[in-house]
Image 1 (cartoon, chains in turn red, cyan):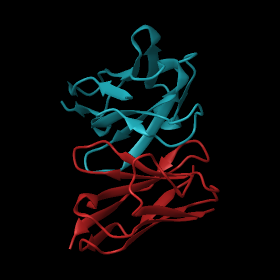
Image 2 (tube, one colour):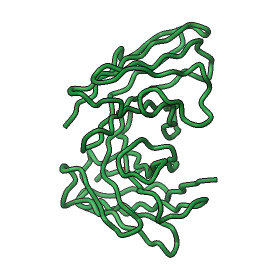
Image 3 (cartoon, helix red, strand yellow):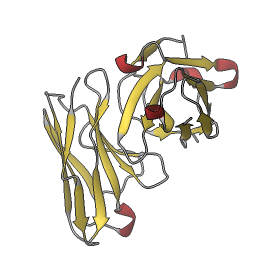
Length: 107
Length: 121
């Protein structure tokens, strides 16, 4: 099983700041990585697939990068609606696995 | 537009079974794999398995083998996930999720609203 890790666990940020979230895979997964945003009481929302392709309707302040084992989600200027938990997910191998999440909270 | 609408919350006793439904609309039901993902209270996301609505093929995570059954009723565009021999650590929100393309392993761009299953004596 591919283990996904994310850092940091929690990030305290002010609106307007640039945010960088990290995701690491226990073995190479090429670019088969997605990022999700989840707000309390809601289902996850797909942000990024293929490590760097924004999903439909996702604003350009969200960007993804990386390949192999190291990946990054960047939010260029954090908006109030971006405070949430962010998960990465690999789809290179079975079972599909998610990272434990990074909570982005208001500073 | 694509919609996945799940059944309501359930409260079950340990050892019982639960069957969660996921009704699809806005697309051809048999064209896309459906997956099930669960989330324990305050925890992360755990993938459980998938079903191909076209032919009923399934794949389950090993830890759920023997306890989970995923089925579909194509006549009403509905998928089901049944989990048996429930334990307290099965308490979670269960989501159905659809992939964006005609491939089995990828991301999920459409999600049901989630069904809370609570297991308690």
